[in-house]
Amino acid sequence: MRDRFGPARKPHLTTREGCKAMMLVKVDKSSSWVLTRFIKEHTHPLVVYGCPSRNTMDPKDRRIQVLTMELERQDKICDLYQEQLITFLRNVVEQTELLSTKIQDVVNNVRDFETGVQKSSNHQ
Image (cartoon, rainbow, N blue to C red; front, side):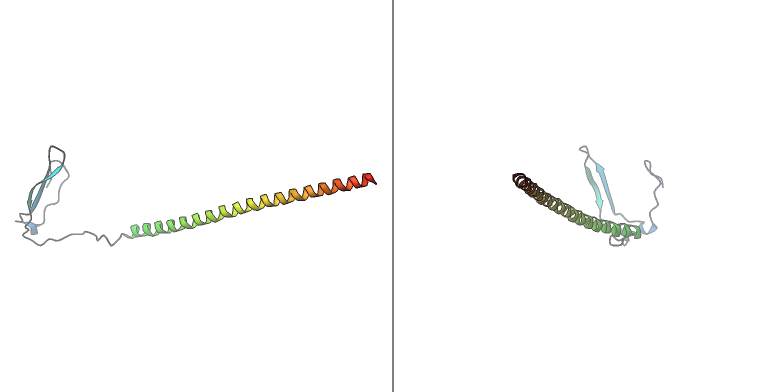
């Protein structure tokens, strides 16, 4: 069968012949969908064809999920490494500043000592 406004439809299975169940919806003036007719009773058993369960995943989707979880795990590890590296570099900077201060103190002490030695050798 071909609908006036869409692609060809598959014909209904013969198991549904004579079934009065239906649901008719229309759009009203306020652009809202409105249920205009509904008949619940079926004259046949309801059968679901080819609907995959939500619990079963396509192998490709499962692979994507596994890889996404692995990527998230690796991102967390990367964040931890980055944090450790930043902490290490801060410690290096602190130690460098401390060593620079100590070296400057030693240089000043050596200068003071040399100045004292020169003064004492000049007085002799």
